[in-house]
Each structure stands twice: as structure tokens, then as C-alpha cells.
Amino acid sequence: MEINRIKQLNEQADLIRKMSIECIANFGSGHIGGTSSIIETLTCLYYECANIDPTQPNWADRDRIVLSKGHAAVGLYSTLAAKGYFHKSELLTLNQNGTNLPSHCDMLKVTGVDFTAGSLGQGISAAVGMAIAAKMDRKKYRVYTIVGDGESQEGQVWEAVMLAGSRKLNNLTVFVDNNGMQIDGMCDDICKVAPFEPKYKAFGFKVVTVDGHDVEAICNAIEESKKSKKPTAIILNTIKGKGVKCCEGTPASHSVAFTEELFKAENTGGVLNI
Image (tube, rainbow, N blue to C red; front, side):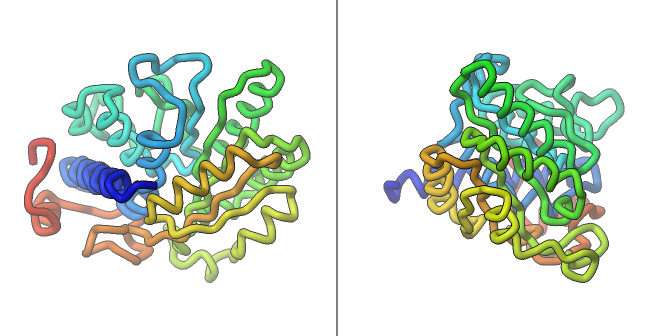
């Protein structure tokens, strides 16, 4: 990948991260940790690797992108708004009364969202179903899903993984946000599920592990997944709360009170209207 393109993607990721945190600050609280850790992945998908068209959000042959860890919805909303699925001004209605942007992503309310998330573990199951449907319909679209490491303590995740491997769904790519933390502390202290590589390999997946904040590495892994004869798991080694100094690397950043004053202390200025 050309250096200029890497620079552009990094700049776009920085913008989307700022937009996301500004939305949370405007409301006063939100899921900073798991949102910030997947911004580079969302940027790579929507700005480089996925076959999508914001002018045709319901295009039948589009790639599907399923945010299984749906509490990171503000990151997806900000990416969609930046890409042109809806106006950026709507972002400041996040979680407000009557909003179309609830805390967890809702496909019935938000243009561009491919699956309504809430209960952890369900998104990856839906993504596997979408990948099977594409095979049955002889469609070429790909399905991408982002799963949390804490979420991976759900048995439903591994049922879905088992089926994907059994069906050899080479049109499916699973991203695992491996930031090591969940709402109550360190994943290893609560219910250890790592290492992910041998588990996914045992279920018949191609596995690639990358720095989850390196856009070039993420894009290369996605392109590699498109050539695989197996489903692919991309393990993203990430930092919870990445880029937000007061929250970075702390389990408490999962969902946290975050004021406009804190936002202004973190940034030189907003990109919306704070």
C-alpha cells in the first residue's frame, strides 16, 4: 500500500475516532473503550476493502458488515456518517429521546446498518447465516463481522464458528477485537478465552494476527482473506480506549461518564458542534 494512502486512512481513522468521542461527550456517557479499539478496522472496511455504495445502502450485492459487539455502535455510526450514509448532524442525537441512533446499532433505524445488535454472540451467528445465504443464492458478496474478546465467552460465538468452518464459508471474515478487557475487568481474570489463534484454526479457519491499529496490516489481512478457501479470522491486537488519554488501556473505559470538558481537554476542537 502506498504511503500516501496509509496516511489518508490514518487521518480518516483519527477523524472518525474524534467524531465518536464527541458524540459520547455530547450525551455525557458511552462506550469509549470498545469503540476506540475498532476504529481502524471500520475505516479499512468502509474506506478501502469492502464493496459498498453509500448511495445504495440496500444494494443486494453489497458486502455485509455486522458489528456483533453492538455496544460499539457509535463508532459504526460515525463511520457511516463520515462515509455519507446520513448527515453528520444526526450524530449529536445519540441516545437522546426520539433518536434514530440508540446505544446499540439498529438496522431498522439507521441507514447502512446491516444487523441489529444487542445480545452479545448473536451478531456473528447472523453473519454466518448471511454467508450461507450468499452461497445458496450464488452471490459474490462477502460478510465481515467484528466480535469482542469478552463477547467470545458466549457459547453461541463458538457454535457459529463451528458451523462456518464446517461449511467452509470462505466468504466470511471474523475480526476479533482482542483488547484483553471487558466491563468487569481483564478477560483472563473473568473467563479466559485467549489465545484465539489455535481455537479458530481448530474450527477450520485461516487465522491472521495483526496490530489492530495498523491500517496497512489490517487491509493486507482483509485482502488475504479474500483469497482464502476457508473462513478467515483476523485477530486484532488492540488497546481499549485507544487515542483517549484518560481512558486508554483501562477496563473502566467500557462504558464511562465523559463530559464536554473532558473532550475539550483531549482535543484541540470538535468536528461536529461541541
